[in-house]
Length: 208
Image (cartoon, rainbow, N blue to C red; front, side, top):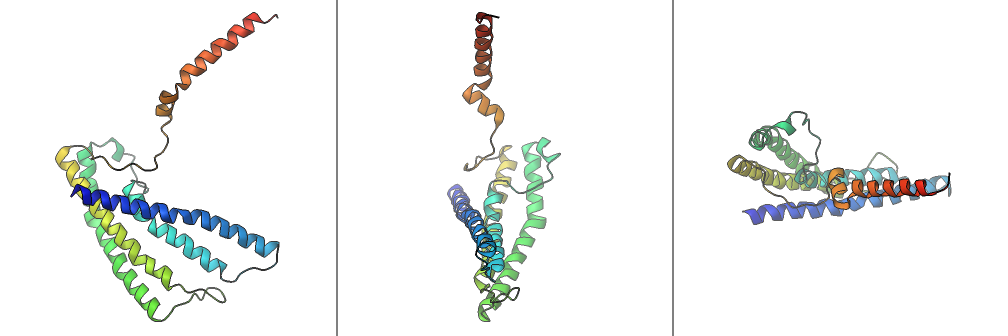
């Protein structure tokens, strides 16, 4: 079971990191379009649709990755002070009541939208010469499926926490920098103290 959970975590991490490159691609694409529009006087009518689809794909496919890293926004003013078992109980309840019904609806509706879009060879009507959008709509159920699998992982971890009294260890990826730990690693305070002493000694030795 643990191997399955870790596999789902790693697959969703890989997917999130892969689609994370869309940030760079989107930045370069927007930069080129601005240059083409204002410097060359040759804007592309399909660029707005392409930008929206790239951002939408990034946003949707990063959902499971963000969930696995506990990166979604939550109102944890009080949650952070709760013991692990209470946290796990709240999370498990919210997953069952809100998360799974919403994600299952996303998969169901997303599949219908994507299937219909592929059947009619749908193109965007927002701008002239709109690009095909059926590949983009196919991402909707795919994102729902990744979220569904990741939700299953989170529920199992909640159950384990309820049994053990502590959260199980997870694979580490990108984490926020802990300033205090960073100071301990590089001994910033001690180094700065030694530097202050050296400066004071040099000032005393120098002629006034």
